[in-house]
Image (cartoon, helix red, strand yellow):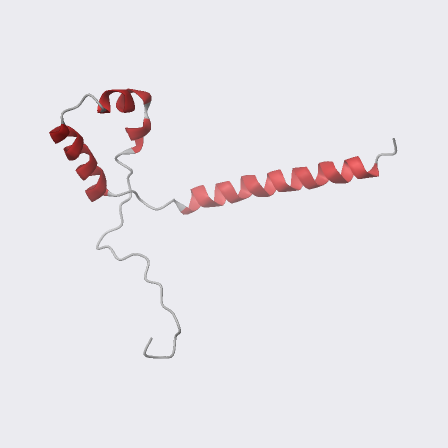
Length: 89
């Protein structure tokens, strides 16, 4: 700001970035089914653990893979449209 920037967005500041999503299974049917029956103390312990371990950012390769899949899909749709336009009915 002192060098003339009109806006600064500070997104993340951590001492160490998490690398493993330890709560990956939290959305499984078994967990969601049994979670409501747990005592409040255990539900708090689980959620507190989830908050302190945090979720890692997406891996670059996963982002790249998703982008490649989207590119292939977009090209396939464009080719199909082109093919349909060039047909004489």
